[in-house]
Image (tube, rainbow, N blue to C red; front, side, top):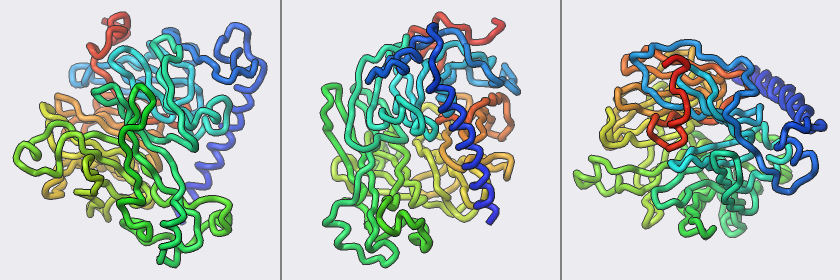
Length: 424
């Protein structure tokens, strides 16, 4: 009941703000705003632009920083509800922006920005609503340089690969031949939605894909039983039942487990989180088989988790897997670090109800042992030490953020022109 009441308030707040933002962005634009002008004139592919000047500062602020204990870099903050992707420095100041909606954004070493449009807010506003089925790459100045489209929706995650390709997620309907074999009475007669993980190259060719229903049992909803109660629109077939709701595509790096002979953890295999199964799966890229899975048992186990990644060699905890557990039912989120070979809990960030993101979220391990946590529904980004002391905190003034990530000062050439701290 507590969860349902909170959910009602969250949705009411979201739609009120989304309506306000939608009204604002569909008004006659200022002639000094090139991106707004192109949208207003009905261009099919409006060109967002970028700026090194922060014209939408709002109430974003750095609330806390211990300069000598933080990990320096520039943090990419895709905002949901403002139509901005920010790059902030260690003082919390915006040093660059891309004027666009983002469900997921990744900065590339050449200074380009890879983006999935169609965030929760963007799905209500043009042009982003019509761009929910594309991967786009923009240069530092916001010019479109590459795009790839599929029918339906490309969603949640976008992973740049060393070969220049992208790994992402695509929603698909469960094929009729699979629907016909359903034996679970809670699923029979429903239209199920599945997911496809795919790799696309620069020639816009899909060179690898993995479909959930081909490797998992469509009669199973994972860790928990399939729900008894469903909305009328799902029961009558007007809307699909979201069977998987996959949200993560993460590539295994070089790691000690594989070096020691455990073939499950071959570099290049794919970690994915299927949210509606509350399960992390490891996919063997060559066979497509699921070779490892994790639901956990700490505080009842995973609850609709987002984000899983193996810690790279050279970082504290190398080879362990970090998981952002949303804790949707307990109303308290966790960041877990586990040994994947024993499923032993190595480290956990658990501060009760002081940390909660009902959906989304991410984390990142640094060389000094600190962990950056993106509490997307906060919206808050904060860095904690191994002893769980907070040494850096940034608060936003938007509906939510979409998985913030920090990039080191030498990551790309464009960073050389930016101030890492306001006072240096």
